[in-house]
Image (cartoon, rainbow, N blue to C red):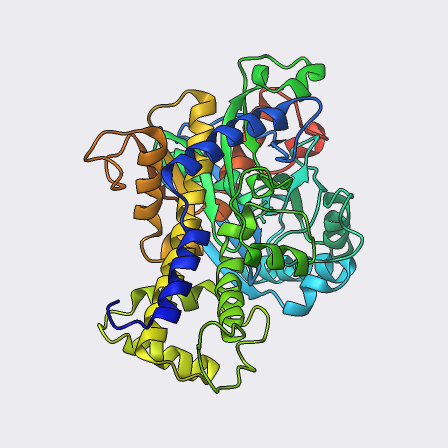
Length: 482
Ligand code: BGC
């Protein structure tokens, strides 16, 4: 960066001070995280919800049957039909994607459930024309924080990821969903309401017995792991066998909502303030794909207005001023620019923002993308390390999915390096391959994972193990299980 003038260099140094998270800080965050995970399981609770999900077993690879899976994502609605054959760890899948209209995210609850039921109806009519169907069991991946008294129940705690539909928070989402299906006569029985992280963990464990944690690093950010019922004080009143497993949807996006340890920058504070739910999802807002581009944009707008440095000097920045106009893909593309002169970055700025940048400005922009992407990866490692520390796991596999994990350059290796620093692994480790704790690309959690959880639930009901099942009789009437 020899050619960067002093005013810009000073800004780069300032940004590094703001965004670099040193090893000691990572360790401090992780230790606080461990305490907060425990607190979330206590009767009093904490800011991390630590929701018991009533998914109470890992698959053994021999689950069988045909299941539907529905994934209500941010951009798409995906419906799958999954068949688990006799062969261990195998599956067949057919699927259809439907666009999730942007207006739905801020529309009414009725519109939401109606739209989803319409998609399911279309799917069934298309794939099962003229068949006389008994109710097909459905695993519904609903990737928002929901408290579950039963596996086929879920009270939405709060919308995340930019959703803001009135009249859903604080209510069980299952009855209105089932009512919309019933109105249309769609032969489906919701068997399990599933979080994407739990689905990811279970799908990955179907073929890899070392899998202990499922993570999503995508539009949102979260993890699930398998706890023992005896370590969940808030379920003590249910007198469950303490050795039984229980998948916990951590909802770790809410970590440090009270702002005790996370090194928030002024930009993070703006993101929070302007979001539909200020004060919520403090950790998620520093890591998840929905926010990375916005953090970047806010820094550039700030630098443009800063009299101490001249960035995009003399240019108007109307496009850059538009909130949420840059996504994580924009940062990825900058970090992936292979050219010494950052030509691709220059083209991106020109095409997307109508801005002309000098070479030193391009250098600053590249560094800024690196800083934001690296911070996200390093902070995410604190969550993984905290679960492992809490459980005393010195080695395991973690299944991860989501656009940031899969597509953001260097995210995996930066996360692995941070895990090494936090957990004091010896030299040679921290590269992501063959590390004691390895974060690996997961199997399809919201498809196969949700189907497996439906299968595991029916298997449990068939054995008369009805903990966390609202209506075992109705469940017995659907699907075929062994
Ligand atoms: C939601 C979680 C979800 C995560 C990843 C968060 O915003 O609260 O339930 O697992 O996003 O999709």
